[in-house]
Amino acid sequence: MEQLSKSVISRPIRMFHAAIRALIKFQSKYCLHILNVQPKAKTNVIYAVNHSCKDDFPLTCAAVGRHMYVLVGRQHLRLIDRIGFCLNGVIYVDRKDKANRKTAISKMKSLLGKGYNLCIYPEGTWNLAASKPMLPLYWGIITIAGEAKVPIVPVIMEYRGEDCYVKFGLPMYIRENDDKKDKINELTDSMATMKWEIWEMFPVVSRGSIDKDEWTREVKRRLEEYPWLDYEYEKSCVLKI
Image: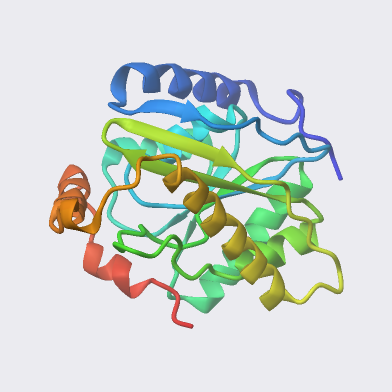
């Protein structure tokens, strides 16, 4: 496997990545809190990140601190976002087209073979469920990691007010004879556990003091921040199990 290095990543991409990290400090309303040290890997990796709002990718870039191509589901996007993704490096995928998903997987394996990192949001859409730590994960990430022989590094992002808390999990390796269902369940459990660990950082409140409409307002706020998103279509992309 070719090692990821400055010689692999083009200078314009490195400059863009440095610029986006700097701009986040001035444009994002969220204060980033990285809760643990990112695990070191001897090769390039796939970052598996939970997904819940428009700020996920730029904040993932800031937390990870390494360049990575990103897998993006075909949807309505702002022009500035399309430009940003193209400058960074993006693989678009039609989540409802089996042939297109295979093409995207082939492109990702090619990039991994050249030593690049990938960022994948395996839930496939925003998780705005009130009580589900993780939506069902798409299995493609297991296939890609196994065939490319690179580890998956789980990353959890949790938003509270104007703070974003980030936690890294241990790298997961996919062996040739591993059962894909077992591995996707392992990844799901790892990411859900990490989210619970972040939730446990905050004070326990009594059921009677919980504002039942608070999460409804939060969902409305996130959707209003990005009116380009067709949320009804996004909900139809949740994996059925």
